[in-house]
Length: 125
Image (cartoon, rainbow, N blue to C red; front, side, top):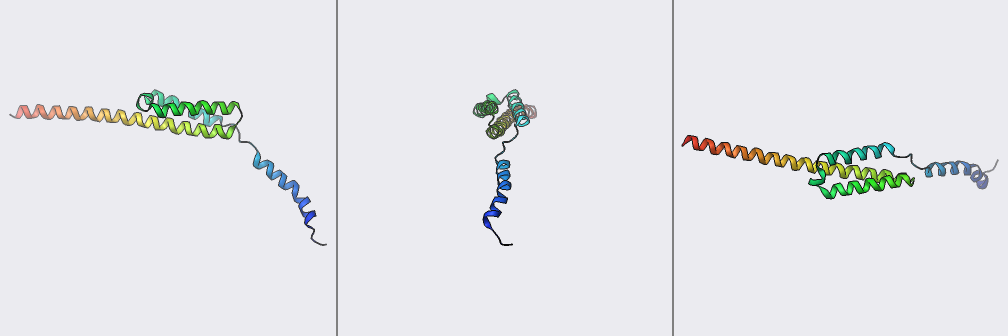
């Protein structure tokens, strides 16, 4: 039996075609990722992120809207990517809102501490 390249190629063609189809198969709809991103945007908005970080919140909402449109268009790869980006933007905005709230609370504690020091200094004199 001699090796025949054409015959081997003919036998491998169906396997290669099947592998090519599997590689081109579309992703499943990223519905759970989109739900998590939607919740992240809503949670960030509830935490006051729109006031503390309006650019990040606007980006998050824009990307979430584009992800929803990509889902309608059945472009699941784009929907997943935009959903993940929206989630990251929302979490960043929420972190900035939390940091701003913490800074405000720290300033209030510092002001109270200063007032107590002044009161103690007056009582000592």
